[in-house]
Image (cartoon, rainbow, N blue to C red; front, side, top):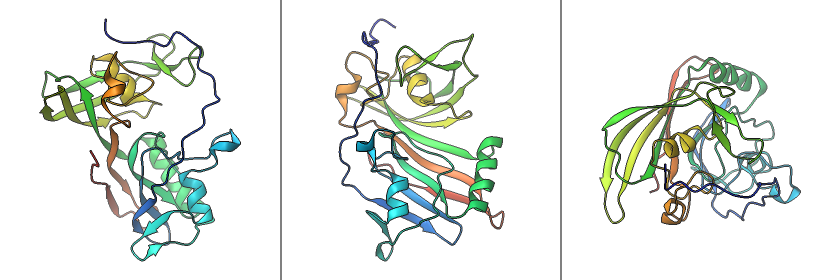
Length: 242
């Protein structure tokens, strides 16, 4: 792809996340799990850098900026995150409130029985109405925290997409992604690989795609799983903010 920019310097792990004043919103709550809506710009877990202490997990455990139906909530000291969203990604996450729930949910994620759907705004007009993007994904030791497509060392990865809307000025496409595997940065690098990077992405971009949005336009809209206590089918949904 001739218009894809590649960093010419080595990335180091000295990133400090900007402050995030948006709160974590509770979408559903019982004694076993929470469904929450994570804002863009908030880490899922606190980072190794002590300046990156603020995160979804820290707020839940310490009761900071977490908003429920009755207002700001108290702490959830036993909260655990069976899965995470990238810093820039917003949307629905499931939180385990005890060790048994965490174990059950982790088993579902490892078995691949949990279905996730995302909405993303891509650069340009995607030609096909739906399709699949494949490409084995491996860590890129020279450009941390990026990953790369590598058929030799990479793990098999598959993302399905459905075009929802094509927009103009500038040309862009709103798509629904259904990832069939759960690799790090999968949707971001797959979008770049077929010529339509996600707007606002700072790691996998074309010459202009990062500048076309103030944030990463990737949103976890839907999560389907089995409740860890009663095997009830659960559908978590977060409306798209863009």
